[in-house]
Length: 192
Image (cartoon, rainbow, N blue to C red):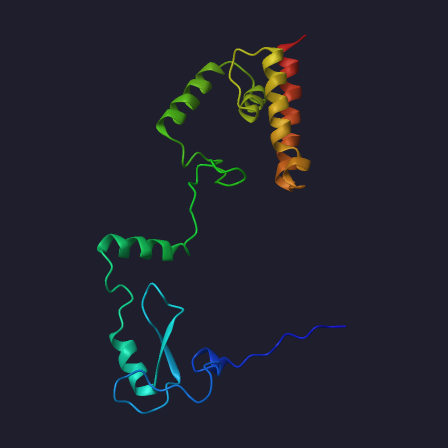
């Protein structure tokens, strides 16, 4: 059996919904005898509490209402910043948050210290064949290498990039294939 959603009247979102008791509400404007059919927020702190007005007075109230009235400049800036991000926290793009961040394949967001480290790694790999240099880069290792260091790093990377640990992610699977190939290359280069 299919459940039907209850329908609701969109006009009730702007006008009186009928839950105020017997008879229509009176306009909150002093001296006005019209029915208060339209609601307006009381203040920025209580936007879900309403004052009820007739059409003419709700228009006047809304045109003069200032959400930021009574707030300091710092409070206004904090509210505007929070509204920009829907009052949700933001995280840096440097990958500090697990599973998030940018994959910086081309090194666009690399710091000067990271660039210097990369230059030193390139200098230390001079004289090695391209396959070994790529394997070192894949496993994020630098010479001199030992079999134990290669195995230790391989275990770390397998735990991190295994598809089962990443919900079956295809990118993780491809990365693991590259890690396996790099491991085989480096173990052969080090020898027994």
